[in-house]
Every structure is written in structure tokens, then in C-alpha cells.
Length: 260
Image 1 (tube, one colour):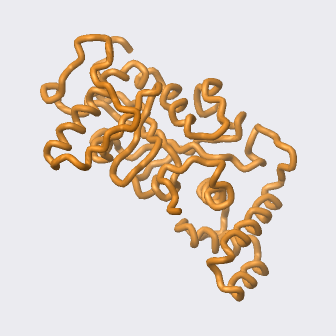
Image 2: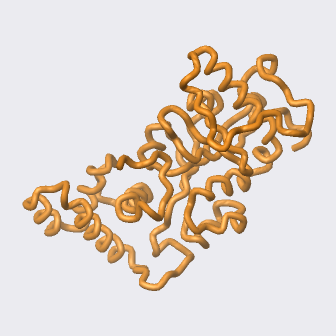
Image 3: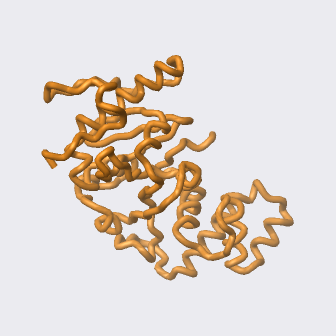
């Protein structure tokens, strides 16, 4: 990887190049938002900061998924980050990877930190962990080096591929805990009952009563529609993610902080 061409988000003539192994950009504890700068200056400043971040993290980013995946896992509570090298290790801690092709709308809907598959100008791909979204600003990180960058800067290197980490249901997890329901249908039925209890204040008493009496598939169909998913009544990864968002908001990290 030492001979790999530098990752660059902008033309190298427009961004300073580090001539010393020491960091060329010292970031504050809280990444500095760029929205307050005039538009042209903000765009130039953001492009240069992003190019410098990519340059100084080049070896880590091009070395494989491990550094970026471990950066992402710092957002997951009680996860032994250093024990994880790739997605195949995640079921051991009750997590999994979901690879998708999409856009920011689909990422926002799932509302979990993601790994974006970016490409440099030499066609080399590398993953970048997006830990938070605040409006059109994304917090990216690798190896403890964080930067807040406009989403538009990431879009220049992104073709829509991303990997999302999510909490596995107990029947798909390699981590066994006391009280887990290992039967998929029984587990899903219990989750739907809990969801109805949690969301009951949003329903009329008559609607809640009807939903408790319909089939499990109809309950799932209603929940999917409520969360903006394709309402086919078949529970899959996206439905499980939304169940966890409703029932376990303190056990999962949100890409966008939920409204109070």
C-alpha cells in the first residue's frame, strides 16, 4: 500500500500536501462546523480539510475494513471494538453487517452509523465510517481521527454502496443470553406486542384493539407502513432495525439524534 497513489478529494494543486509525518491539521475536540462560513470559502475550506484528512489516513483507509469498522463500532454500547476485524466477527457480539446500494435517504431511514465505500481518483475503493449526521454535515472517523465534513464532499467519491451495522435478533446471533427467544415466529410475535404497547398512545383505542386481534403478518404490515418501509408483512433486516429503534433506543446508536 505504500506505493498506492494518494487518496484525494480535490485536485492536488488546490490542497496543501504534508511534507512532514506530523499531522498537518489539528482538529478541535468538537469538529468545527463549516456552515457559518461564506459559501465559497466554506466549500474550499471543506475540500482542503477533507483532502488532508484522507491523505494523512491513507495507509489505514487502504489497509482494509478493520480500521473504519472499529471506528464505527465505538458508537455501539458495550462492544469489544479491538476484538473485531471484519463483518464475519460481528455475530459473536450480537451484531451483523448489511451491505446495500442506496442514497442518503435510505441511510437516514435506517438511522445507524454506516461505512461508505468511497473511491479515489485512481479507482481504489476504501471504507469511511460515518458516525453522525447533523443536517448536511457528516462526522467521519478512523483511528480516533475525526472530521466533520459536508455530505457533498463525500458524494464526490461515493457511488452509493454502503455497509450498515445492526443488532441481530436472538435467533440469528451467536451470542446467547438468558431469556432469549430463539424461535423466529415467537420472537417476532413478542416484539409486535411490545411495539403495540409502546406506540399505543399514537393510536385510537379502537385501532389498537383491532391491531391486537389481527394476524402476525398484518401486525408486521402495519408496523412497516408506520416506519416508512415496504409493507409486505415479511420481517427482514430493515424491519428488525426499526423494531430495535422503537423498543431499544438506549441499546443502539443513531446516526441522527432522535427528536426529543
